[in-house]
Image (tube, rainbow, N blue to C red):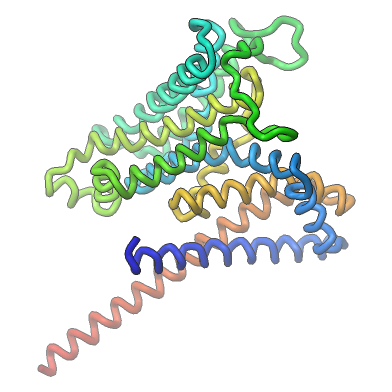
Length: 362
């Protein structure tokens, strides 16, 4: 990485860290206003998220379903596209993975699991490609179409769970358990951490390589930087838009597959409490950088895992304080970036005026 690239990464890290500190400070003030000791509350959160081997593993597993869609969203954002529909892509990915595991050929591990995860990625990619085609060839905003398809995906998955795939007399709508040969094994004894973590880390490395080391990554960054200019120089702009959204959807679909094979063991109604929407915040907080996204996902996982500890340490405080901290961190980050961009534009304008004045005097 060049010196300018390192400087940019350092600035991005500073912005994200500052936003997080401000969010924690604001949450501390809210806790104090409610009559709680912020130090005790945060100690309870940290203890629950990192106080034991099992707690650390729980934090990692809560970060996992947020990490994969965040990587895909960051890839789309590099192309100037807002994939708001990762939640729906998670659902269709989970449904496709479940279909292969329940009704496909019974293959030994890892062939069966690999086939099911590929199906999850293909379903997520296909679901996201539809808004991509509409955006590329009809000019319809992908923000609207990806969001609308979320509800279609959820209702379609619920129909499968409550209808043809339903286990009779179950206490909660769910499919049968997938065969053991398809399950992702646990890789850290004494915790819930399974092989899905390896898949997610590989996906993070792959995303970084795609963006920085491939022609496709260069092209999508060019489209994201200036779509019209990319068309003028001959880049296949429309195909790149479709491909970028499809790739984004593939990561989200993979998250759904890992959730089924690694965590749940079957497809449950409402299995995702909004992972796809939280992934947008994680991608922004991680500044679209894979390493930053991994760190942001772990932060969100820790806040989720530690919410119960905070609630115990602060009697009468709802665990909803965790998503409040998440939202505040992203809000502060966006405000800081907006302010920095405004200052930079003003400096550029002043420099341009100064150069123009010097030219007139010359």
